[in-house]
Length: 250
Image (tube, rainbow, N blue to C red; front, side, top):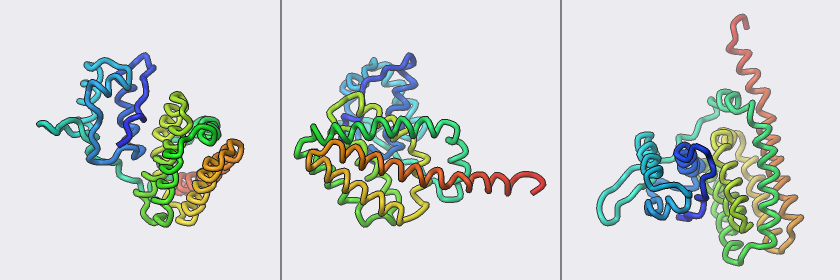
C-alpha cells in the first residue's frame, strides 16, 4: 500500500480534515479493504497533526465503519470496507446533490490534473512510468468490472500526481478524486463503451509521459477530463426528467 497519499493538514479544524482525508482516501478506493494504515506515530507526522487528534479521528472512522482496529503484534488500524457503489437508479439523486458545486470542482480538476500530467512528463522516474503502465494495463479489458475499474482509475490519476513530484499537486489531485467519488461511482455504470474510451485516454497520457512530451500529456489529460465532463453534463437532462416525473401534477 502506498502511504504518500497522506499530506499535511492545513485546516483550522485539524480533526475534521484528518477524518475527511482518511475517509476520502478509502471512498476514492486509494486504499483497499484489509490495508493497514501507517503506524500512528508515522501517520501523525505525515498529516502534520498531534497523535491525540489522530486517535480521535481514527475512533470516529471506526465508529463510522470505515476502519477496524486489530490487536496484537500485527495489529493496527485497517480499512474495513469500500463504499457501496450507487447503481444507475441513484443517478438523479447523486447528480442533483452535487450539481451546485460540481462546475467549480470540474474547473479545479482541469487545472490541477492537466498540470500534474505535464510535470509528470518532465519528472517521472522509469519506475513511476512502469507503475502507470501497470495500472492502465490492469483495467484495460475490465470495463465490465465496475468496482475494479473505479479503483484502478482513481489510482492511475493519483499515480500521475505522484509522478509530478509536487506535494501540493498530489494533495490537490487527491482532494479532487475524493470529492468526485460519488459522481464518478454513479456515471461509471453509464456505458462500458465510455469506459473503453477512458482507458484509451489513459494509454495516450502514459505514452506522452514515457516520451517526455509535457504539452501532449497536458492536452491528453485535459481531453480525458473534458470527455468525462461531457458524460456528466449529458446526464443532467435525466435529472430534470426524473424530477419532473416525480413532481405533483405530472
